[in-house]
Amino acid sequence: MTDLDALPTPSLLLDRDRFVENHARLATHLRHLGVPLRPHVKTAKSLPVIRYALRDQPGGVTVSTLREAAACLDGGIRDILYAVGIAPQKLADVAALQARGADLTVILDSVEAAQAIRAHRAATGRGIPALIEIDSDGHRAGVAPESAALLEIAAILGEDLRGVMTHAGESYHCVTAEAKRAMAAQERDAVVSAAMRLRLAGHAAPVVSVGSTPTAHFADDLVGVTEVRAGVYMFQDLVMAGLGVCAVDDIAISVLVTVIGHQAAKGWLITDGGWMALSRDRGTAAQAVDQGYGLVCDVAGRPIADLVMSGANQEHGILSRRDGAAWDLSAYPVGTRLRILPNHACATAAQFAGYHLMVGTRLTGEYWERFNGFGARER
Image 1 (tube, rainbow, N blue to C red):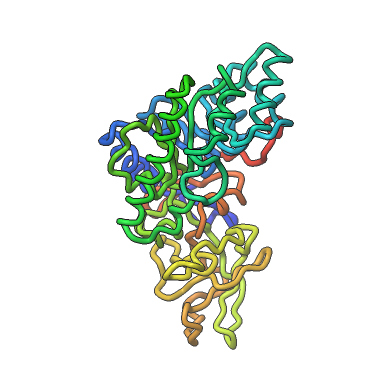
Image 2: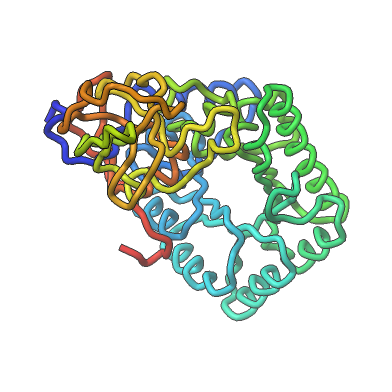
């Protein structure tokens, strides 16, 4: 299959050249800083994408669900960091993945979770390696690097302590290059200081892990850090473009839709791609340029000036001019194929079972399946 007109809509497209360039850009930057990249697969959720991203990396991945961990293990990837705070009820599934050969590390930021891991070791005789999550920016989770909780959790974990990690989620609000560089330094300093406190207290902390797509691209000094995690970098999206992390032309995924109607009095094109295809993510709404539910492109992937996806019902997308002005809808008759660039690559890709690969404006005929879901035993 080589013709976009033959695809059903909505369909998820992946520009292979842009994906390859996006990966190379970050991998090269981190190589110059002397720190390996541990790709976060929450965006891709696809073994062909992950295997490509690991071609020039040590081999470890980051996941956000145990379903991702199981799929990676099925694909022969053993070194896995589950980077969402562990719930005690999930320890049995973690242990089952370990029994199948996974070198699976979890994260936590509470005494209760640490006690659950210690109780698991006492009951089974087997440990579960853990990283303590550090709060580097007040964004979401983690313990402060200077807190008493850091050493208390470490003492409970004992030999299951593997190190520290953090995610600078506030970097998604850093617009200038200077702000992103400052956030990258803040992220680094928080985990490096936490690791030093642990070591001075007699605890091993071999892993010092940082990561967000903005800070990964703008870090200029990662001394003391042992790995960097990032996921959206593979595909990029409008949020990243709005932050200056990438250009719109770097965005590697898009959703192919078909015009199914006109509302001339309202200045609307109606498509068959609603929020079930693009998601309800409005991550650009707080940025300087609000891209609605996505930026509209022609079938070749070229942005159409001033045209955005301004509304989203379940199966219907509403396209209109950004300024609300009247325009000639007849240029896009019913049956016209268009492509929508997403606000948030993770949320949009999650709506689909796989990617249709493209090179330039042509399909390659390849279809890369995705694995969705949350539990380790979901199939």
